Length: 416
Image (cartoon, rainbow, N blue to C red; front, side):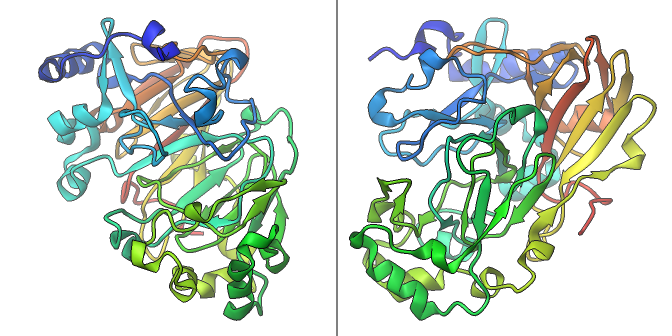
């Protein structure tokens, strides 16, 4: 099967040419790198159809792979899908008609791209973000802690949500998310849900609580916390891992196989219900003030806002005392210009309007063919961010972009 991407995208550069191309791209872009769309399908979900992908290409990986419901940004993290393509989930830089992996570029010059503190510690860009877009809810699930994920050679996965107004013209089927467990829930009650896995709906949502999702707000979700994301298109900054365990056996009449519960569990523990339950952070799941602990309202960053432009914190706070990732939303009114100086690298996606970032044009697409190279996504290198990036709105509507950052980037990050 010849994928659409293989017919339309720029050819992949030979690996021994990456260093030369990267140097030229950084010089030409003033430290800014153009990224191409990275699409990811999920076989057990239904696409929400709001991430601008052309309808003819929803199943571009083949119907057996499922519909495309995610677009990943500035990612060096592979998608953990069965039967995946070798580069699935990985972002490409495009320059002079060739493309090469952001992952390989960081391996070549990590200090310039993501900064020495992050590169020296992690040897990679350890975070990514994505649009997560589904027609209905997904199974109540959790992401393993760093300790539990290490048992299968993976890393844990804290994540955050932001419901961009520009990406949510419709609610789709269920704009509510179940999160955590009702205070007072016992481990024995949850164990009974796992015991009833093959009897249809295992009833786990009876033990949880749903929260209505509001555009322009978000949530911070630590590892080990159950959540069943609802149907708003979600911008998700997160740690660079794709581990998860599905705890719900039936969603909208669709069976969830046991294999998705134990995908990232040691093989000898695949039927050890007590071990599976102990992966949960029980105290956080039954928190009597769950919303107070995890809900996020945008906060204006006065130090990076001015006449005609506003920079909002949309993902902030600490996870178990650590600043692992963060994100902001920048809005420029028509005709406005500004220079944004950040202390570290970021991945940028344009969600409304058109303009310029440094030497690169920005254009929000109305529709994207699979494999098409757009002008809406940029990687802002550590070097460029610290020197300052100039932006201009050249259109007749607001120019809006989302950008996310790596660990320990900010000294003024709101804690909560």
